[in-house]
Image (cartoon, rainbow, N blue to C red):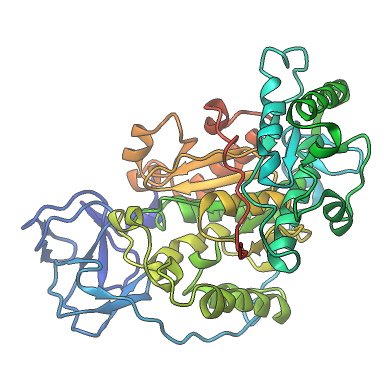
Length: 516
């Protein structure tokens, strides 16, 4: 299976991404003095795989173009064959035309009878789960140990007689007190806790508080309209009698929930019930060539089948946000995305050394990404080519179908936490450097951008998108393979991160508050 799209542009050790680019990408290490026949140039430096090489002379101040998009400006005259990176390229913001909804094209949905299916768990309210956990949530860090101790009691041996229960898992965090009593930081925290406590992948949940914290259980319940009952119970440590008694009470409560939780059965349901959160971490120069556009191709398939995909990480769409806004279903949706980006740029991150202001992580830089514009080019590709159907604040319930956007930070744990709180029942995570990540209660599949990393970290990676560059898969074929992996994982097949036991420490609420 040859990748016709890339075969036209891959020659030896480099790939050209667009005819009008003035850089090419090394797909393997290029030695100093090595001839690059396709460009009729000689490499002036040793260039690592994933990094950029000038394909022609670039004058000082001239735009550097990748995918025919400006990713920076030459800091000096750059000769053909020279490595192009932060040492000779500067980051500078530029004006962008925001024309929300001007390029909207509706999805060509498949008839319901033709849509793909998976083996899901149908809850009493009609929602469909991909996993079946019991969750123990803390309101505050003071109850973090208690919720963990409750969950840890339920070892695989003790759960052996409940084969349909995937586990008992704790969701603890360092927040909940010493913070603002009202406003978005408190609202965000409560949305997140409530999103997990009522998540479709939980058969039932306990919420455990201390008693004197600012994030009071009663106010959490009222603000988030939670229904306390057989599937959602609350415990207050100061009322029950302390640490030991609360742990014991929690264990007994979970014991009483297991029989009912174990009665679930998987049944055939439409893939339109699937909501996939999209994440990228440890990106490299290949992420925008293989894993991210391949995931985007899978998202396009999912959307045509009536499913939902959540694009996130607001700092990592900066520089290309206008292209997403133009594809919005309405001016209101497009403008809401731009408002979120401007909040990050003009309010939240002013004067701080964060990636939305240009600087990406050391791992990204070593992988060949010079700045946030270059990273955003690839990051946004995860959302596919379809319309933007909705924009949500962190941890808000996602109710639209198709590709939507959620405002999250670029840091993987809180970003994924927000999407799961919003309803994601599966996470698809692309990586070039090799991020080690897993999540509960929604399983995470890992997509490697290159074959060398996949082979080195095969225990952590679910699929090798590097085969696109190897010429054994086309981009479209890889998108279909990812879509099929989504279906099998949603149907109960364990992901690599699940087999490794990841997910117990990755619950991380986005902390945007002030403490004192």
